[in-house]
Image (tube, rainbow, N blue to C red; front, side, top):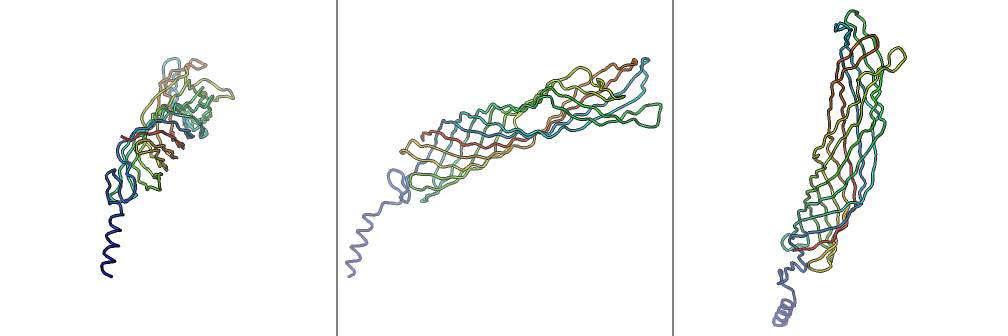
Length: 293
């Protein structure tokens, strides 16, 4: 009887694959490890959320250049929200490896997308409420007004994702969850902003010649990604994933001095301030063809 069990045990050991095989299999799971490079495309839905406000202040002088009053007015525009869709090329580079004797794996990857999206709001009206404080009088005079902006734009050109991911194998599929920081190449453009004050029932020019502003910067955000890879063979695989990203709120503070001549020989010398706060929320579906090295 003992010889029978010995023969059975020997037979089982002879027919059981080794823990680590010559082709890199571990616990019977093919080890598609190493560096990889992929090209493909993505479908993106990007939501721009922007808050816009404007403020003007100034001093009023008479014909003799004597200060006769000071004033200030400001207020926000209605919040802006616009969602845009686009197809974008995708490039990804990364590395993946398995945990020892496990179907589970980990990896790192860098993803680049060229989005080139611009959110535009035309003839943006920013209502103003303010006061005029005459030097020779004790009581302030309140008034209303508007800052009109011909066009306010928020633009995203490039997007970079730096992701760490973890997953498991199911036959020829690798299912994974990734998370990491993102960078957005953001630009804000304000075209031809100018202010009016409503005095004596009529809109009167308050800030002079229309002014424009522009700035760009790289904005940090975060990305969560859920994906699945299908291996055609030991070198080539398809990768399909869904990502959700959100950027930090990025603020811009613009200012421009102005000098305006008013009826009656008065002159206003002041500064126009325009402030923006923008946040980006993005979702995308991506498909790439990848080669492992």
